[in-house]
Length: 445
Ligand SMILES: [Fe+2]
Image (cartoon, rainbow, N blue to C red; front, side, top):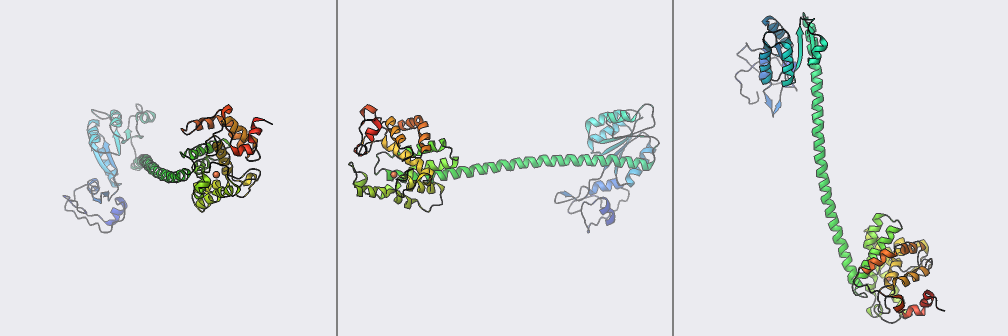
């Protein structure tokens, strides 16, 4: 059959095969035999060894083991069961039966109790330890063995002699049906366990792939942000010796943004966008940008254009970071009271990111050396900023800034380029003196 080699080949009608053995239709199966003495069980066993692409062609036949010391009863039961298509084995006593059970897979054992040597009860006990066959116990000794006791011993059914053929078959089929359902449940459970294992494996593989994708994405993002940062540093070198100013603005801005409760995404984007606030200075002539003296009105007008130049450089990007950077570049010199530049935006018309960076840019500029001034002490700078609450600065951000002044001071002191200044040793800039800031802060008339 399909390339397999057999000593004997048998012929059946296709209808018999379909009804009893085939798991799927097969219209061209031709089996011829010269040996007509084989039992149906032998034929079934031969046929179940046939295979097509490793899959069995036939249903696995049910194998029964009949155990009885009386040969007439054994043969009678064998004939009865084989007529129903079952494959039958026989044994005269418990010992013989156990040997068969140890070598052949048996679905159900039909055994008498009273037998010489090992009786049916002992066979039941020993058999249940060695295989998962079902046991149907038959006895005529009603007084010694009860149904309850047999079931407790592990029997699947218990039948009193004499038993009619019809009842015997009905009870055998009930036991086999329960066995089939149980095995199906076990198979489903095993399939489920295997599916769960497979699912777990797929989940692990998916997580690993996602992890690798995330890692690749992070690397790409880091490279992209690093590129932006280096360009910004290149621009910043025009008027600041170390580039530390933009790093401080980044750290300060993220701190204040977290303090006022902005989303973690916006905080992260602001951290990368804030350093670009003065990128427009790249378009301002050095002689104006680096002028140590006060600027003329015209020069200041030119300085103011660094906001719109920066916005032009950053406009039109799909990147969240660059869109935020655009807003910051354009609005970080606007004032809460509408007196800022370039557009005189007022209050909450100024993007929150622009308001945050605007305040911190002023703080860092006041506490850092510039061509036109010495660094101011942090305490004096805080006073200057508080004086401008609700004029230059958003009051909410001033309050958040004041509550974070300790952390901001310690960030600032971590930079090598930071020059500390004492209140009693400070030098006001000419610009602040002209504006009367020294008198306002120090309370001098
Ligand atoms: Fe600026």
